[in-house]
Structures are given as structure tokens and as C-alpha cells.
Length: 156
Image 1 (cartoon, helix red, strand yellow):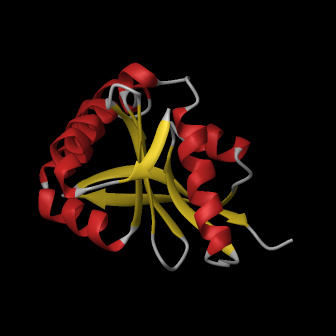
Image 2 (cartoon, rainbow, N blue to C red):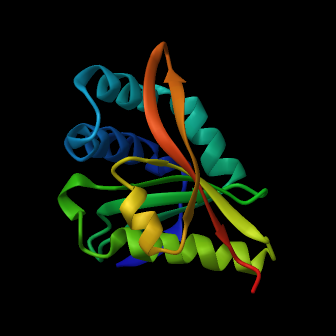
Image 3 (tube, rainbow, N blue to C red):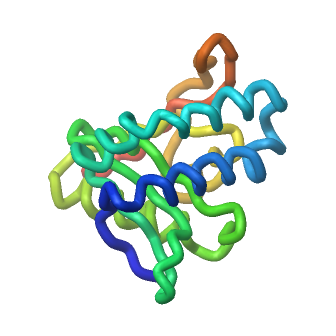
């Protein structure tokens, strides 16, 4: 698996991966209305393009150039996005991406990382050393979802 910087030419593949992961993976923890609202956010390609251009945004891909996941980091230490393709779950993709984000945050000398994590992703983030700050409810286009604000301290 190769990790590289994302490019705007990846946008359609990233959108499809994002929506597919939410519909197939997150659907075990969220109801159909929540899944539809959340996945629908993937159609905002201008938002995705802005993230690719302004964040530390990485993709994982196979030697055949199939994108298997992506993750992004804001300058302020927000671990903004991380999604793994529904067909590449439990193959180490999320770990590789999270390690890349943690490494970049350390390189930037950030004191901590903050992530807003789905119910589905919470156990993974806990294994990566994140702790729950608080459970919260967010609104996506009039539909509420529960998630968690989590933090990982990087300064020893």
C-alpha cells in the first residue's frame, strides 16, 4: 500500500469511496435517514476540492493505483477526515493513514490531534491512542447524528 498526497484528479474516486463506506460500513451504527444525509455530503465536490488544496490530504492506494482510503489534517490539529473503501476494511489501511496523519502532526509540532469520530470509528481511534472528550450530536442538513470528539496528545 502506498500513501501519497491527494490531487484534485482524485475527487470522483474519493467521493465514491466516501459515499460507499458510509452506506456499507457506517450503516451498522446509523439509520437509513442518517446514512443518506451523511453520504449526500459527498456530492459537495467544491468542499472536497478545497480540502485537497488546503489540508494535508493523503490517499492510500494499491500498486495498481486503486484508492483504498483517505485521511486529512488541518493546520490547527484537526484530524478532519478518514474513510476506508468498503472492500478494503480491516486490511491495515486506516492504520497506515492514521500513522501518516500522526507523523505529519508531529512534524508540524502540534501538541495534539482532535477528531470528530463516528460511532463506527470510535474503537479504532481508541486503539490509536485517542480519548473521548465528549459525545455529541451533530446536524447534517436537518438530520441529527451522534459522534464523539476525541483527542490524542502528541507532546510527551
